[in-house]
Each structure stands twice: as C-alpha cells, then as structure tokens.
Length: 93
Image (cartoon, rainbow, N blue to C red; front, top):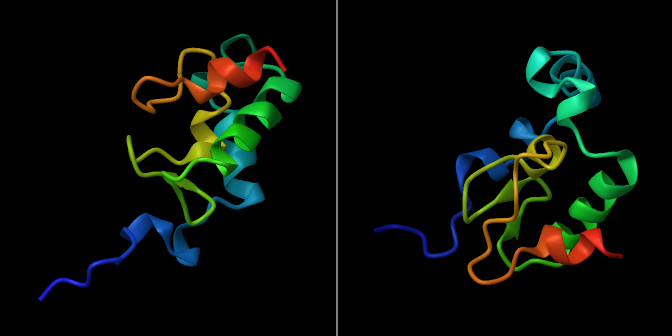
C-alpha cells in the first residue's frame, strides 16, 4: 500500500542543491548572465515560492518537478501555478 503523504525522491536532504553545485551550474552556458534574472528578482522568486503550498522540501516545485533554487535564475522560466504566476506577481514588489 502506498504511503499517502510520501514526498518525492528529490525532496530528500540527499538531493538538496549545495553551493558547489550552484556555482558549477551558474558557470555553465545555460546560465549565462544574460539569461539570468538579477539577484533581487531571484530572491523575490524564491520568497514567492516559499509561500506556495506546492513548494516541498525547500527545493522542489510539485507542479513542474523543478528544483526551484536552480530554475528561478532563468528569465525564460515562469511559475507554473495554475491561474497565478507567483513570480510575475513578485516582480513588481
């Protein structure tokens, strides 16, 4: 029988994104500075996700499965919450 409130595998501590991994990601061409939001917008996106009921384990969006601390850097990404782009709402803050 399945456990009702079981978290996904990526929500466990062993899958948390550490500082070294973030440095490596941000140095890759996929995260070139021109593709990233500025630091203030990045922090606003993280804060918006922190108040979302679909944000699990401090890392994972349960709507799209992305690792929020990683994907929140990209200008091309938006919040997947149905009917409410939390990132767009926080951008005007």
